[in-house]
Image (cartoon, rainbow, N blue to C red; front, side):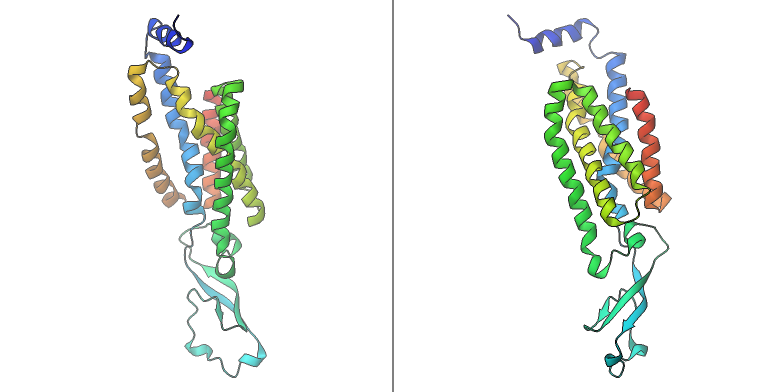
Length: 242
């Protein structure tokens, strides 16, 4: 007696093989991964340090006699010794990132790596739970769950007022990314004949989307606008996936 998987493969072949439904499904999933890939790569631009100079230098009175301000360069200046520190900064106007939004330089420089790590913890958690979800409720509901999570929290990220709350947002975005990355390929290949599966998987959609993200980041120059753009694109694909 043939197995269930082989029966399913024969059924797909009898229904027409790789027909219009399969081609539409693969096209939608590959193009909708724009939101997934951009969310994964977001911190490469959103956390970029666009260069800064020290605007306000706090100097204790005991150091005034030994500090020659005329010879001091303020470019990327964080402190001069233990008693002289920079308290405010001027960032380059070339782009707006979370670094310039919340002054994540000098003693806060570690924060960008921390936010990225929090997102990757979310990706790990999403990847772990996606397998169980897909077997329990199906590939498509799981894909919709992850995609909705990304869209909602990309929209929420636009309104964040501190890097602490933004870290929480990136954690949930990471969960959505992990879920979508785990189920998107099984969702496609389960509906196409075995002969077409290598081709479906090998379509270089994600590298092209990575290149597109670089172009979009250069065009918008604003981390909040990128969040809004991902929300709009994600909402469009959510309506199609539903």
